[in-house]
Image 1 (tube, helix red, strand yellow):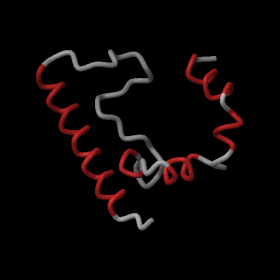
Image 2 (cartoon, rainbow, N blue to C red; image 1 turned 180 degrees about the vertical axis):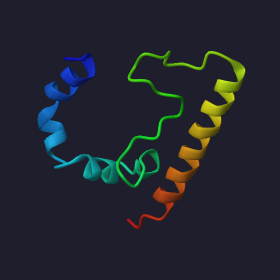
Image 3 (cartoon, rainbow, N blue to C red; image 1 turned 30 degrees about the vertical axis):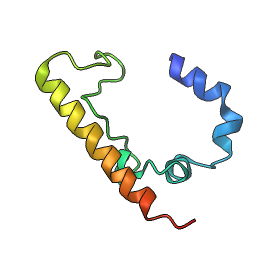
Image 4 (cartoon, rainbow, N blue to C red; image 1 turned 90 degrees about the horizontal axis):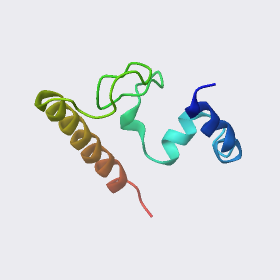
Length: 84
């Protein structure tokens, strides 16, 4: 079992609070990190944990930075729409 699956198993009680992935995403306002089909939108190219987890050149860094900023701005807009 990959290490990340062990983490999910270890914290199963926590994740069970949300019922499913979609509810977890909605609760933490992470909607802009997933597609309509609940596929995760990564900030960098993803190949099942085989690629480096950091940008390896300037162009990859720029793309990572752009996607990260886009996400933060979108999430900030989502938070600002909440009424407390």
